[in-house]
Image (tube, rainbow, N blue to C red; front, side):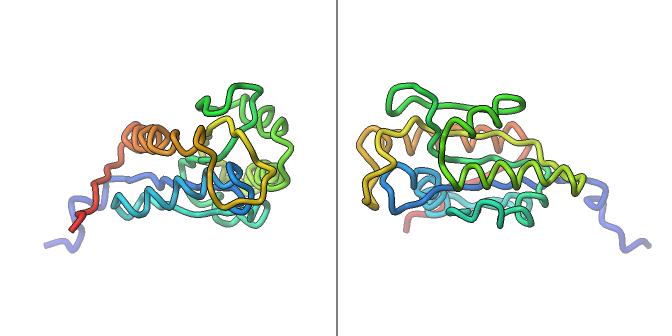
Length: 173
């Protein structure tokens, strides 16, 4: 009799949901606030990691080079109206991130680019919202951005399902 489980041949890709941003500057903290809400409301299998990346930028290289799939949540300046939602992937990512003029985003882009040197570039999707205010010193999101937390959570969960993973709501009692 073999010690091998029939499940050993099933490959579950590693998926990371990464929220980035600085919670001290209003809407700049959108990605982190979304991650906090996801961690509070949902449970995931072992192959799905939900990570608060804050403003670690280039220091995230070790973290983002591990998963097969990376779902990033952030505020994205894209010349839209405050509250507009975005889903970026492929060639659209570097162009849009550079347009953000945020130091943590430029560092994040460099970290993503450096993954190529490690031959481990995760398939990446960035989900974001057009911020109203990323300059005011405040730990509160603006109303326009706060109203998009739940819609972005729905988009994150849809991406997780698209990648073949599951999730479940935590018990509220």
